[in-house]
Length: 69
Image (cartoon, rainbow, N blue to C red; front, side, top):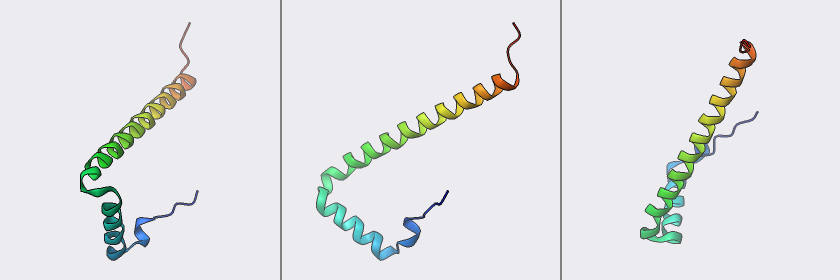
């Protein structure tokens, strides 16, 4: 799998320009709301990822040690 580090290719000036453009597009009042929504989305994604990982580990444990009937 190839991973690219998008922020690693950006310098400080580029990041500042992107932030200024975002501020101009959405305005100062909308940014906290956008960040809140982004944080909620990231949290839900991480919760789902944790649940899937837990289910896989539980199923793998059942396969290795099947329940005695």
